[in-house]
Amino acid sequence: MCPISMTCSAAPVLRQHSGIAAEWLPRVCSNQYDPSFRAAACKRGALVGMAMTEKQGGSDVRANVTRAEPISVGEYAIDGHKWFCSAPMSDAFLVLAQAPRGLACFLLPRWKPDGTVNALQIQRLKHKLGNRSNASSEVEFYGAWAQIIGEEGRGVATIMEMVQHTRLDCTLAAAALMRRAVVEAHHHATYRHAFGRPLVEQPLMRNVLADLAVESEAATVLAMRLARAFDEADGAFVRLAVAVAKYWVTKRTAAHVAEALECLGGNGFVEESVVPRLYREAPLNSIWEGAGNVIALDVLRAVGKEPECLEHVLAEIRQPADPRIERFLDGIRRDLSETGARRFAERLALALQASLLIRFSPSSISDAFCASRLAGDWGRAFGTLPNGAADAVLAAF
Ligand SMILES: Cc1cc2nc3c(=O)[nH]c(=O)nc-3n(C[C@H](O)[C@H](O)[C@H](O)COP(=O)(O)OP(=O)(O)OC[C@H]3O[C@@H](n4cnc5c(N)ncnc54)[C@H](O)[C@@H]3O)c2cc1C
Image (cartoon, rainbow, N blue to C red; front, side, top):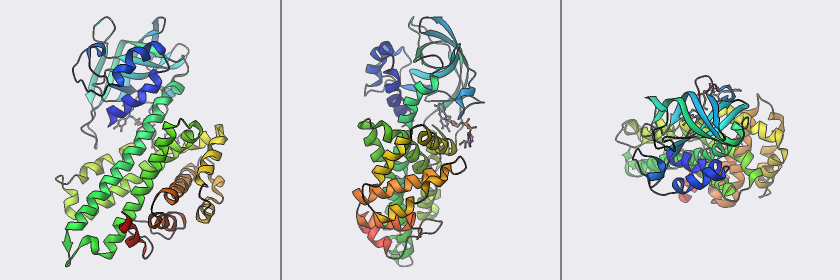
């Protein structure tokens, strides 16, 4: 989904420049994939990628050294190297580069307006752990033609519109991976017999499956609530909740998928089952568009710069007046420090998930979530829900 996500997320940035929006949005919004290597104007649909990361600057994009020299009003020549550029078959890229007055955001198309190929060269494709059906590349620009979007010096602020949307997609994708993993595990356990009974009837396997289902449900309800906030343009909620959700849901995915894989036994480790592919994909959403620490620090930044975001999210969390949530939130502000940023983001995410589950999920699931994730009646591995919880959860799954 990476190319679709980037293309969709580029739209709000393209909209910031009326000329570019008029030319590119109809192509970007097309439902058709046109793989031909031609100028975007001749194609049935266009994809947009992004090139921010350099060798010395991934999280810290202000360290970017790619240069942008003005050639005429709004037009620049870009020179430099990008260490990560996914979906390199895209028809255009949002690129960060240093203009005379600071870092700026550019739209760099594969073809120039004069009908010639732009000076972008793909150096090599990354040999990745997973996510292999989506190419990621290293690229170089040799005086490549590009148009500026926003102002010089405002590059990060401009491209952040795209990043916020791709962070939503990271959260949705991670929730979807968890859902697929637990469905595969549950399916296998339903039909596989061991010791005279289907696995799904064995009490300990039921606890594992139920615990995985609870995590998946919590991820889904949080991702969906976040998506609604984007649809409603609820800026204050989005600003904080997107970082909180991206941090926690993507962080849980690798552990979740690994446990689901184990439910299939040896077959889970073999490529014929789909699970190894989910497993290799699982860590990715936690890395790109801000790795865990960077996102946790962004949560701090949001609370520091726009304290109303926290009040907004806390008001949402408290919509069901529930003593379990109040107890869990007690003293949460003590972790508002750089060292405590992960603890703070995690607690806010768990409280928000609990609140959403209480309102929108069967009570068997929200009760199991609150007992395990909020009250601590839980172990350090999946499959440690309190007695009696698993049957109720699986009945609702
Ligand atoms: C499959 C894949 C596809 C990608 N596609 C693209 C793409 O299309 N375009 C693009 O521009 N980039 C892309 N990236 C790059 C990705 O966005 C970066 O890898 C990511 O932002 C991290 O940057 P980095 O690799 O330089 O790591 P670093 O910035 O070196 O970070 C390394 C670690 O240090 C931590 N860290 C950083 N700063 C701090 C701090 N202040 N305090 C504490 N910890 C910190 C990070 O959380 C991370 O865990 C892709 C990456 C992957 C894996």
